Image (tube, rainbow, N blue to C red; front, side, top):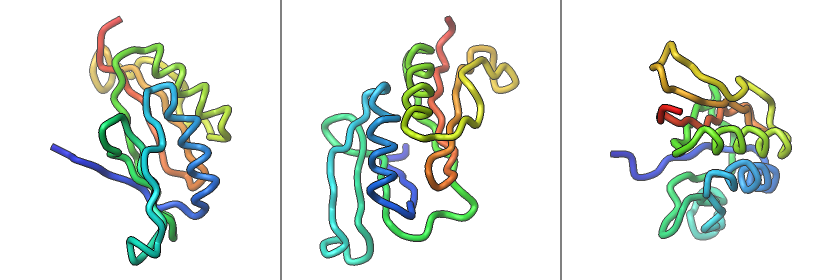
Length: 128
């Protein structure tokens, strides 16, 4: 079981603003920030649902190649709302909301590139 994961971003302020808006429709919020003076290497920002963050941004040279991260949600409406919010926050469309039956018949997802080109997805596995 994965406890937490994250991506490295080139501009912490820009990426925090993007993720705060993009992840809000799926129930994620910025929960914690720790400066480089404490971590010893980079500023970090943790997003998640209470009681703890499970998705982290870390300042630095972005991952190459960019990372793909998928957030599982409970409804197709949340996938749609994520896509709208991420696009409004400056994301680049990398696959609009829709079924992806080549994965499985109920796979409904949307993909957006974040400011550093990371492929961020919201996916619902529930049948309509």
